[in-house]
Length: 412
Image 1 (cartoon, rainbow, N blue to C red):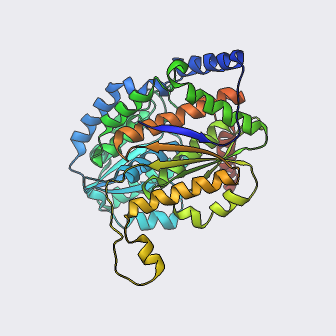
Image 2 (image 1 turned 180 degrees about the vertical axis):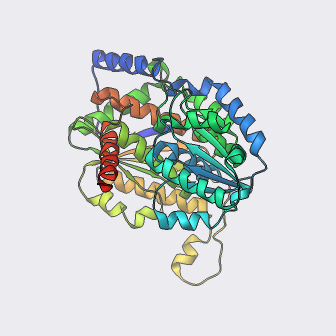
Image 3 (image 1 turned 90 degrees about the vertical axis):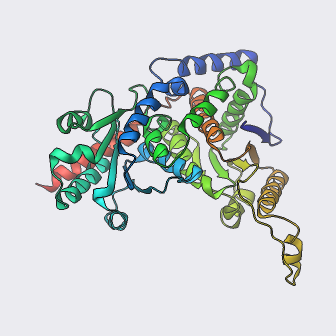
């Protein structure tokens, strides 16, 4: 089971009344029919529907995932963290850089590809642009519009939007993002399920892992430490410690940091408030950002995530001369990673930095599911404490509006 421990001398003791008010407001939010992310582990129909689509297309050799933000970061994180066990080649088109897109498309055979277009609104400019280019590739390969249903799957709003309408026109198989689940909270829906199934990942186990931690994340009688963590981060925020470093000690969780950054920043950064997220991963960033984290401004909370047991390991046994070689010889690579983590924790505490030490037993589906739901719930709890709506993104919408206006003015 995922667990965590605050390693800091800073203590917070909320009053019973404050604690109760926050807990009740948070519980009301996660149980609201308008907010659907917390109930996703119980929604087995979404996975069943996705599995049917997978069975229809599982012969495809290439999986092209078109999306941006929450429509791409979660699926990419799943594939990198848990691995591609199927041999399918994945291409994630998550930006509109023409040079990168060219390199990505050079790797694929369009006739052997499934193109998964993910946009809840169905109008996301970057997604529409990439889809338009892929349509051009299909047409150049002699594939007619009547056959697009054999190459596309859409994932969008259950009822409305341009993709939903186009799915009817083309008879394309289409999966739904529940209308009450926002994009950055959508990883435990077909957004993440279909690429996971193509990679041979046990999506069912991800859901079960998330379900196993739900009570801890909703009931203060079981998970008081979860709520205390939220109060602790909020109190530090009020004292000017308003940056959050997320640093897993695993290269395979590097994309988890990127996913967390969007979740944390887009949910909490509004109304002049927010906790700026900083992605990192160990031990690599001990040799770059850690100098700043250790001796720079004391304005950061650090979430260090440990994978207790790696699925592979290597002996460092050697007969080479030199102190460094002899020092490492009795140990394994996994033990060295553990030593680096523990050494960093000790040094951070000595420098009076604010650290949360998180652990998962191993990098498997059930524990990643717990880490996902924990991160989402902690985000919503901080939204409750900061008194901001963690489910909207007005700043993002404003940028989209001005981008379209700029394009319209180009033609004048």
